[in-house]
Image (tube, rainbow, N blue to C red; front, side, top):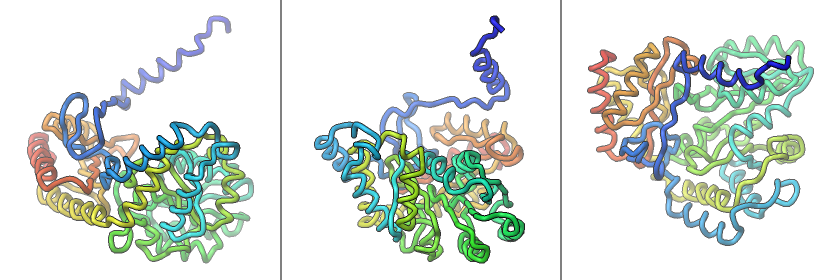
Length: 397
């Protein structure tokens, strides 16, 4: 059709998104991500950053990034399989593997690229991937790229997983069970200690996305993540992680046995065909792990702040759901109430975003608060005062 407008759908679909009030309205961060930050020209309390440990401004990490940039420049010149494989990339992978207590690791450009590119290669025709119903969108997209069959089990329901595994055992050559470690909308954690023995019973591989667990969970405030939290070091087949949250930088990785790294770097197209991290970013990631290994007080502060904020928010009358981690929902029910609460909090100087349908069920809208290690008691109390005022005005509490 000569009169067809090839780009009309862009306007039409965007207008439909706006009609439903599902469109993202971006705010501008005008400086570092920190507890009191400048956003859209206004100083606000930052309650929606994944910078859990406040490391994005850590002096050791900034110094490492500057020195590496001065030595290597701002780009590597190629993808890693050709000429972009810096010695710093290898150092970071060795550092990750040692930190996680496994044989090897492979660093990707992002956590999303890790899930999308690796999951797509781990199973194929005649196989099945079994996924928790609340897994992150990057897992969902990675699974969709495979030719394997897919199955869903009810959120954190080990009994339902067992039913799915029993059915899969009769039909499939390879079985992969995939779960988030910490679920990003509710802040609850996977029962990995129950999932692993069940998977072992059926000869299934276990893949855990620990993006929100590393730097947060672990014994004695180690920040090593959900696998160490359960004492399962070296037993989980694949641990995926990211540098963009508690580590305060950017990037993703997969860790496990040496054969996993060899397999992934030869088969995973999101690694093979992506430009590499520059030296400054890579050096900052190395320094972030070193900070975690030598300065455990960051993780302790995070948990002290988390416990205080959760306790006080509940005492005001807010429902925080099943959160176990610094991800602390303030449940509102209706999407309109969550949006109204977010807007009022902004007016009161608190930047905290609403999570509404379709990201969560229609009656499960909430404000998702992300606690940071370097928040002071005054920061937390000021935010709680805003919550009390706004919650009462909107009749949420």
